[in-house]
Amino acid sequence: MDLQAPAERVDHSARHSGALQWAVRGGLVGYGLVHLLVAFVALRLVVKAHAGAATSQGALAQLGDDTLGRATLAAMAVGFAALALWQLVAAVVGYRDRDGLPRHLMRVGAAGRVATYGYLTFACAGFALQGDAARSGSPQSRTSQLMSLPAGPWIVAAIGLGAAVTGVALGVFGWRKGFLEQLDEQARTQDRRVPIVWIGRIGYLAKGLAFVVIGVLLGWAAWTQDPQKSGGLDQALRTLLGGPLGTVAIVVIGVGIGCFGLYLFARAWHLDRRRLTS
Image 1 (cartoon, one colour):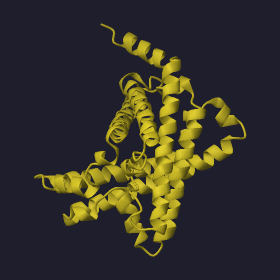
Image 2 (image 1 turned 90 degrees about the vertical axis):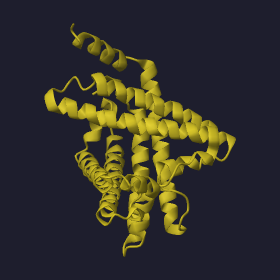
Image 3 (image 1 turned 30 degrees about the vertical axis):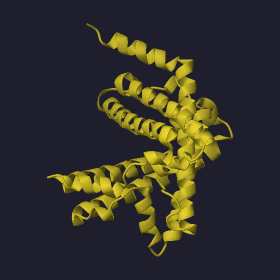
Image 4 (image 1 turned 180 degrees about the vertical axis):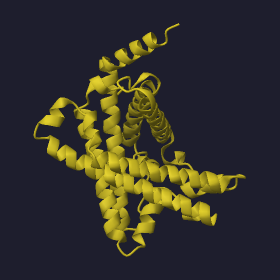
C-alpha cells in the first residue's frame, strides 16, 4: 500500500484550507498576546518585586479575574488548539520539500510545538473555567518532584541542556533571519520587511537568551541537587535582577520578548499558506 499518496493529500488539503489558515492566524495573535503579557510582567519586576509571575501560565492567570478576561482565554484556547492541530499535521506529513535528516528534524520540532500549544490550550481552558484557581505548582515544586526520582538530577540536567540548546538554536535562527521564510512574499520584499526583520531578530535573540538562562539554572539545580535554584523565566529574571546589570538585563529580555510577540502579529498578518506545513 502506498502511504505517500494519503500523506500528500493531507498535506495538500492543509495548504489549501482557508479555515485552517484563519485559525492559525488567530492562534498566532493569541500567542503574540501571551508574549506581550509576559514582557509586561517581566518589566514590572524591575519596579516591584514579585509583581506577578513572568511565565506563560502566570501571564494567562492575570486574564482570569473577570468575565471579559475569561472569554478572551476561551477564545485563545480555541486558537491554541488550532495551532496544535496545525503543527500535528506538519509533524506527520509536513516538510515534503526536504529529504532525509532535515525533514525528520523539522518534524520533530513540529512535534515539540504540538506539546507547547497543547499545554497552552489546556492552560487557557483551565483559567477560563476556573480563574486563578487553575494555577498549578511552581517550577521549583515540579523540579523537586523530578529530583526525587532515582535518576532525577540527570533528568533535570538533561532538561536544562535541552533548554539551553533550544535557546542557542532560537538565537541563531533569529540572527540568520530564518523566520523570513515563514512569511508571504509581500513581507519579504516591501518596505515593511525592515521593521519585521528588526522585531524578529530581537525577539528570537531575547527568547533564546531566556531559554539559555533557564537551562543554566536547571543545570545548576541538578549539580547542587537543590531544586530551589531551578525555575522558569521568573527565577531566571530574579537571578539576573540580583546581578550587577540585573535591571538592564531584565529590560532587554522583557523588551525582546515583547518584540517576539509583535513579530507573531506580523506573521499572522503575512502568513504564507503555501508554507503552512513546510
